[in-house]
Image 1 (tube, rainbow, N blue to C red):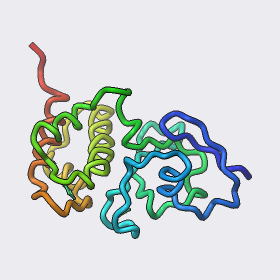
Image 2 (image 1 turned 60 degrees about the vertical axis):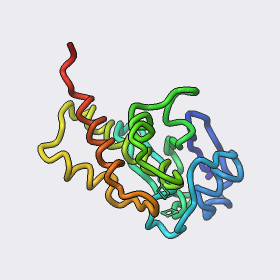
Image 3 (image 1 turned 30 degrees about the horizontal axis):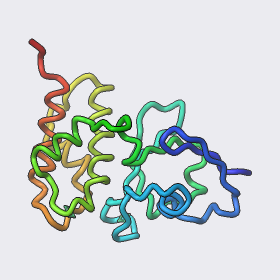
Image 4 (image 1 turned 90 degrees about the vertical axis):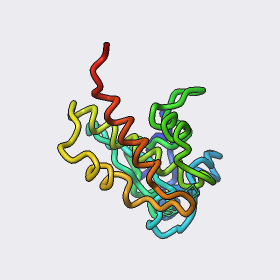
Length: 170
Ligand code: FES
Ligand code: FES
C-alpha cells in the first residue's frame, strides 16, 4: 500500500517499494529539507531528530530520522526544523537558544530545538511544570549529544522558557 504522511503540513505519497529508505534521506534528497542534520547515523546522537504525531494523538514524539525507514512513518504528521515555527518567525525556545549562545557550530541545534519544543508542548498540555523540572529537562534533551558546547546553556535556556510558560502576567 502507498505510504502516506505529511511533512510540515504537506502531504506526500511514496511507493511502498521505498519503505526501507531512511527518513532523513527522503527529507534531504526528495524535499531539499536539509535543516535536519545527519551525524552518527545509528540513532545515538539525536542530531537528526524530527517531531512526529500520529492522529488522533495530540502528543508529538521525537524520532531519529537517520534510523527510521519510510515504512515506519506511514500515517504520521512529521515536523522538521524548517516547519517548527511560522515562516519568518522563531519559537521562544529558538530565541532563547540564540539569546544565551547555547550552541557553537550549531550542528546539533535542530535536534535540540525539536526535542525541546516537544517537551514544552507537553508542559502546555499538562498546564503545569513538573515537580522536578531539572530532571524532566534531563529526560527531554539529555540524550542529545553536542560536541562543542558544555550543554549548560541549552539546559538553562530550556528551563527559562519552560518557566516563562507559567509566569504570572502583570
Ligand atoms: S544522526 Fe541520527 S541519531 Fe545521530
Ligand atoms: S554546537 Fe557544535 S555540536 Fe553542538
